[in-house]
Amino acid sequence: MEGFDLEAAIESILFVSGEPVKLSRIAAVLGVGEFEAEAAANRMRDKLSFHRRGIRLVKLDGSVQLLSSPDYADYIRLALEVRKPPQLSHQALEVLAVVAYFQPVTKAYIEQIRGVDSSYTVGLLQERGLIETCGRLAAPGRPMLYKTTHVFLSTFGLEALRDLPELPQINDDGDDQKVSIRSAIMELKTKEESHLLEETEVV
Image (tube, rainbow, N blue to C red; front, side):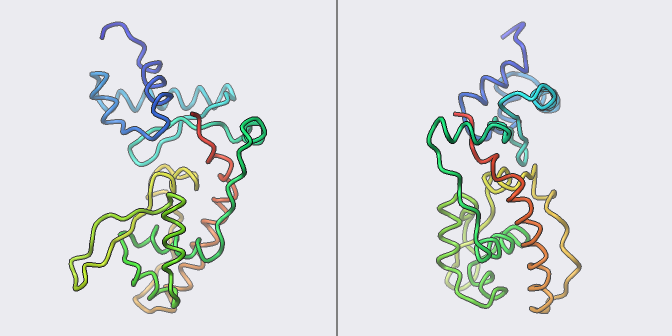
């Protein structure tokens, strides 16, 4: 394809997809370098934000996605009769924090840190699309491993896991880990409240 507008092409791909698309995939399809595709995506993101458009481009761990602007989320919910997603409970945030900071992790590891059974909460976070399985641990019983998802990143306004708030330095002591996780929970809760409106996606 010759003479096409790179930004417009990326916008079309993301609009139709409705899901995060890898920048490497976009670059390959459009026959440009990944750096060039990322630069075009960055320009789009800045323009949409500067002109206060109804959509936003967000970057999620090497992928990009179009989402509706949080400024108009209430109007979208009224027009489409979409209910506001419930905020996560303290227990859910606790499990999510363990997975986010120590992934990939097993359910047993989560329960070791929390000190309580976490089966229901792990299942709930999977249903919400915030965590997913990512293989099995090479250990007796081959327990399932869990990691966070793109939905987790977009829900908490993160571009990549490296953007997670830094945890205090901890030792292997369980009490130290619990204190550290409590700190992480407060950070995640603040981010969830700030970015909850961004969960409404452009379809």
